[in-house]
Length: 98
Image 1 (cartoon, rainbow, N blue to C red):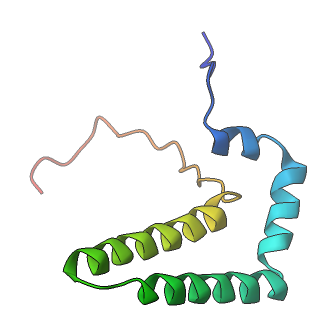
Image 2: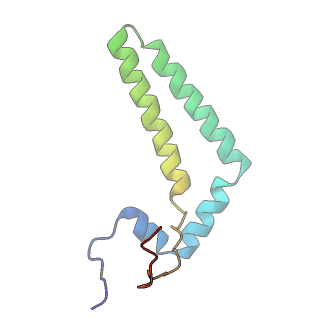
Image 3: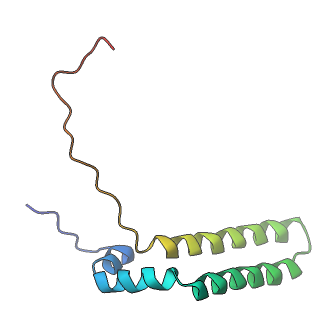
């Protein structure tokens, strides 16, 4: 029986359409996107740092910045298909003296 995914992840649904992935890669590769993401992250960092008053707010700010960076990383990885390794089978003739 084939492996049928009844409830695919959003990433899997996105990757099922080659046109979406192609346009997404083109968008991410543009200079405009790189400048926009850099400016947005710097602006977010500036706004968060202005509200930093004590140890707990600075820890929260650090976690928010980490979350923003993780979001951008997920955006980059969205159109990356996992590499399928070659289907190498282990041989019955293993050298057990190694």
